[in-house]
Image (tube, rainbow, N blue to C red):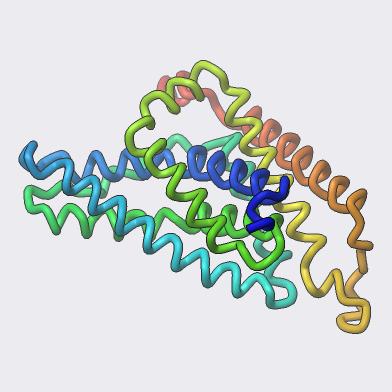
Length: 245
């Protein structure tokens, strides 16, 4: 029980909630599109069952991700993917990814659509949440993941419009979210077994596992995402410019 009272645990919970809100906003869109043709009496059931199935599926995926991250070099790969996801958050592609999501007037067909679409769209969430859970340490990573998801899913499903309006009004929220992913990527990279173990993979540079090294790597990752994201965004044509071409 003491493990759940540590600052590291609650910091990781906060990170998971923020990650799932920032990267999981599409889930609310998917649910709305998949359930839009259901009769009003069944729409709430479709939303609830689809969300429940998506949560269970994501927990299973994150369990495997946490297990795989113990393999040497996979944390390094995961860190690079997180950096890329953070940059995409700051410089998003404006193509609509939801055009091929079909609604259904049958309850279980709509539920299946929600679950399958969430599976396809969950790769970034799974990697980011697994990385955040790693920071909590100890043997309570899965309870942490489940708790974080249970808190954030209702926010996404029922508060998605509010979250989107807040992001539109305060773009700094998205910037901070991208930098958070960079922070997690930096701390994940230096905790890879290939970097930590002095007796193996001697050709890999070793980094001392100190608080200073952890914070330095996190800051470096956050600043790297910010710099690359702003640079990529500055080189892309503005939406109104693209419309006039």
